[in-house]
Image 1 (cartoon, rainbow, N blue to C red):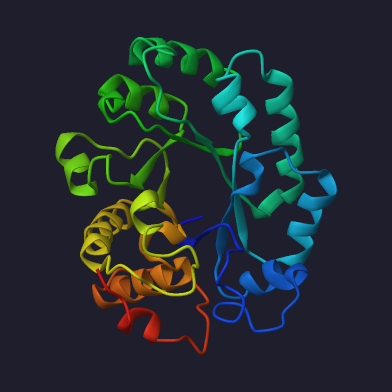
Image 2 (cartoon, rainbow, N blue to C red):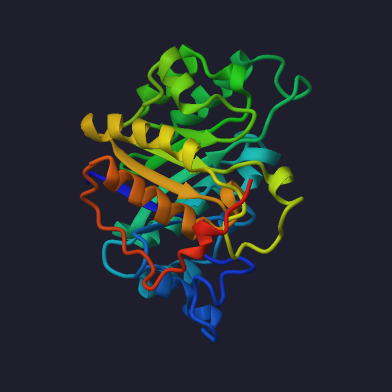
Length: 289
């Protein structure tokens, strides 16, 4: 597997029916339609609870051949138990997602920002992570997202590298910019990488809560990510990239724009991303800071 897989964080949102999804389409048909437009999706619902086996089986049946579904590890594991005494929950989650077989993308440990009441330092977090990593099953893709920017240190990256776990590269206001990351160290810790364009949730929600169009011009920010992806593709690293509505206002439009920017820069994208046609260009033309 190689190339770039591009998609959105979740496949449903207010404002998508009638813009991304055809007017009148039934929600049960959304994922199948989505999989004809993009090659991957980050399933957000698994963060809140482990899905049923029937639900996961339906995801696989409704999507096109070659489509990949990435998923968040349930918050019971990452936020509540924080990797302690959660072996049964984690095993159940992995076994459930394994139903997807070849359509299983990456499983993501999305950790919150930890204050000193939980971990006095990153050393304590690393110790817990190291013990848990020894239990990781083989032949799966895992990624880790942390939101304590000062914990992005060589020892943390080395631990991820040792277990072929990807560091989640994220675009958020309080995290280092991609160029800054590469100036300090090599943030690629596995044979793939995982990018999340998240944006400023609080800021954009003062502008809109209906995700039907772009409301912030993020092209300059995306240009930095194009450069980063160019480096990774040249190194043979597979890229998984997911846009959130909070990044610019309409995640499908963000992915459309990023794809076009990659093509303009001559970046080879061997994985075909099937973008919506026709696509409303006013999603870009009506953008405003």
